[in-house]
Image (cartoon, rainbow, N blue to C red; front, side):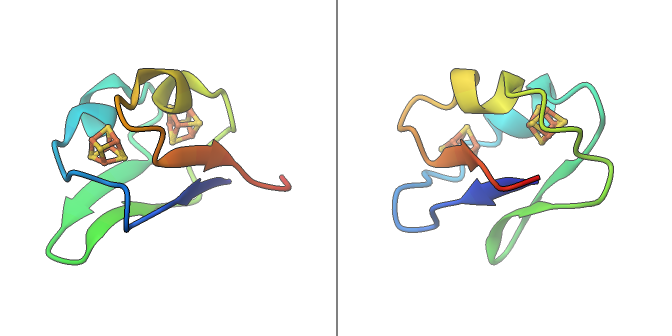
Length: 57
Ligand code: SF4
Ligand code: SF4
């Protein structure tokens, strides 16, 4: 599961668009991750401010 650093996140929404599993959502509280996440890392590589990182599983 991906972890979001909400202090870094710009809420640009780009990671929502690149996720192939539709696991990311941009809400009023920032990016949230759901159980669809398969830890592929595409969003981690995409984020321009390194606000995303891979979690334990
Ligand atoms: S790409 Fe990065 S900065 Fe943009 S919404 Fe996603 S986590 Fe936030
Ligand atoms: S790691 Fe892959 S599946 Fe999980 S949120 Fe990022 S792009 Fe989507």
